[in-house]
Length: 197
Image (tube, rainbow, N blue to C red; front, top):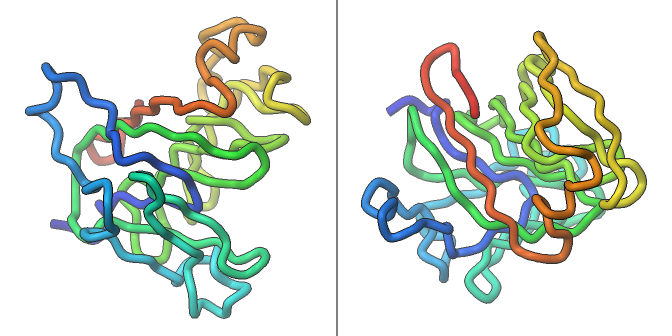
């Protein structure tokens, strides 16, 4: 397997319930046992770990069956990477992020954090599930909305070529992303160059 095809989580909150129906269960491989970080490792090789001079990659623990990521020093983020490598894959996860921190799901990541990021930028000016070329000169950078100062307010700002319009009415976002609750996210990456959905 190729080292660039790792799955990586960047300062996020994930659950041990990978949200799979019985019919789909046989098609998925569990990558989190719900109790430990076995099969995962922390990397401090990215720009997110500059504050620690690349000595630590954030704080990662399992609490109540969920992977919890946070800063270990003020301003020092980090990344959590699977030990196993994956090429073409779909990931299903549940998330319950706080509004404010920057987070993300890095697809096909290297140890130094070069990846196609499914954004989990749950903060003012950010968005959830846009695509960003992390460490790839910001290319691509595709989003169809941005949060304003609160989770209830968004502005539609399609980017990318071609721009992708928001598939829902802005006022209906709370029905699709429930602040303070667990939300299912899915990301799929196939091919090279990758096609991400």
